[in-house]
Image (cartoon, rainbow, N blue to C red):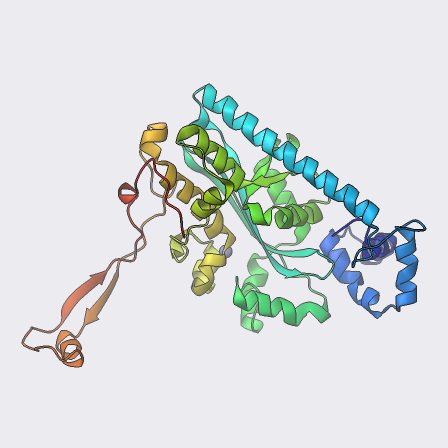
Length: 372
Ligand SMILES: [Zn+2]
């Protein structure tokens, strides 16, 4: 959301009064949801007042009512931030690689899902997962939180539709609601737990890495929960592109994205969070814990731990813990009958269907496979 949009001006004007009424600090998305119905009920002439607040006479406006002059400034700032990110990532990868310590470089990987993306561009956060990781150690520590759903009434249907199509975190009935209540935390509590998890790295403003296409979404959610712009969210795809380039060969950004987002392990239940494992196994591919683990495991698999770092991959740290074997009793004569095959084979044979993913040794080490 542009800070120069009329809605943002309106929100900032209403912020002190709404916070005084509720007696607490409100993150941006919650403030947006508190005042959005009031904004929607306003007449166009009332909204014009806020348009005038953020524009000068003669300004041309875009379709969101933001002056093109200020939109251009914002675009320039975003381009500068993108250049800063590229330089930071290239510098840190080259520095660790030239000293032979790339495998020891610790970095944070984050994924954030949302209940709702409001018209004004605010995301209402749903689930946050965060890993501290290095190639030598694999997953060092992990963080997971589900955020209480604060949704304006007029958006609930839209949020439910999104939830059912993806993470299924919104309760469908009273019993579901009770289960979520036991684990969900307020945005302020989640923000404090993230700060504790990052510890001194929070003060050092260490970047957190997420999917290239989700950088803005995660940045916006963290900003609104912590109330600060301290945490920088960078592209994991660019980080992996640089790591792959110094270790194996140069690759393009889209090739890096293809590696990280490969569909392997999307339905591997064991890498999801406890809540998704216990309640919504059909939605595990949308669980943010499953996402962050998949991304780092896929990077390990494609780079090859032994040739790149001389490290034997560890289960649960570099690749998923094997799923339990699913055993089923098959009535073979009945099966043969259905297939019109001879039925002179004894019945009651136990068939074991492994559900685990390919073992890491089966991965071609040191080469790069891309999903097409
Ligand atoms: Zn989950």
